[in-house]
Length: 205
Image (cartoon, rainbow, N blue to C red; front, side):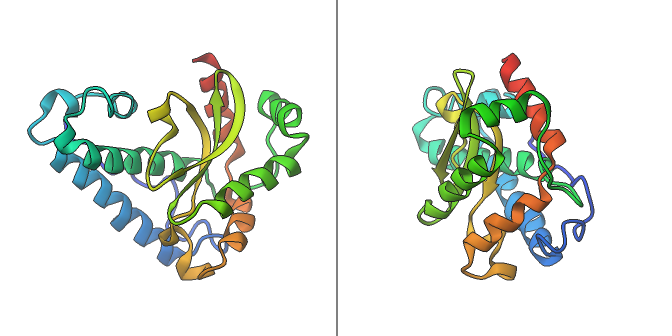
């Protein structure tokens, strides 16, 4: 069964003023859609791989995906997975702070929410070129890291709790070259309820 572009869980203008409507249309309807279309094209002759759940496909990139299509699958399956998560961890009038076990773990690991945000933003700011900043679970422990291009932490056996897209297409129409301003503003769109749900799912394994 072919992979499909998921609908946004809110209107295209719902994240204003953090992310502008034009960027959301371009990002979802063009960029994410292209990853889905390109992934389906790469897997056209590989029904066994196309039938895998997306996360399982990512885990199999280095071991089961033929070399001839490996780069295309890596880039486009990663892009599809990353963006499918990205839309859900944002919401209109988001922001605030996490609660429950996630908040406690952030306090323990990073010395508080401000310390975590600083480390996360730094990972995004220092990512040269295109990529993502991530909060992941590695062997049950929280860790901040960044990946290049559309690489997913799932490919390395990690669990992505949350991630922010620092490709220029995610912010350039509104913020131009001010990636730091985008990273700072983005926290006002975060859906901490969904991030907390992902954290709990990751801890359960």
